[in-house]
Image (cartoon, rainbow, N blue to C red; front, side, top):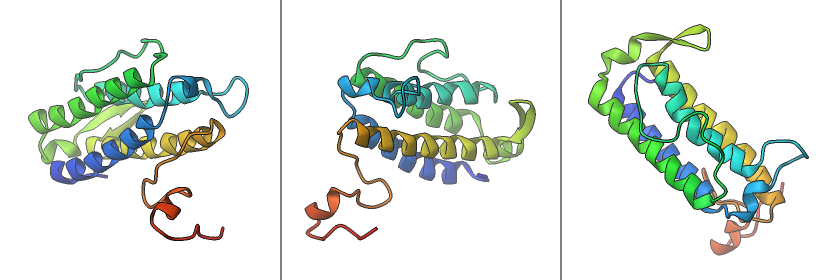
Length: 167
């Protein structure tokens, strides 16, 4: 749970960049890749991350720039990337303009429960991490390079002049 806007800003900026790294590696063809037939595609996962930002935050009273909940999944990876950036940056701008450290303690109705706003912000970040992890698995299935987020990805070890770690 976040107790200060500056702490959220620090972590959101890092997670925003991590999600951008994933989205930058997608291409239009890869958007239709799914783990199993009928499962979420890479495009759907990337769009879900994008839509979740304004959807979750609307429950706190914030109105953000970005796509609407019923907007269809784009067929362009660049369009998903652009929409994600718009929503993610809009979130940070709106919080800095409208909230204080004290308002992070206020509670909102979140899916039938009462969550402090600091908890909602943490849940939003964990949600992004969860779906990015799903995306990396589908990216491997699609034959895409997977960028390292919290350390080097498998194919990045060689670029660092080091052998891949044994698993």
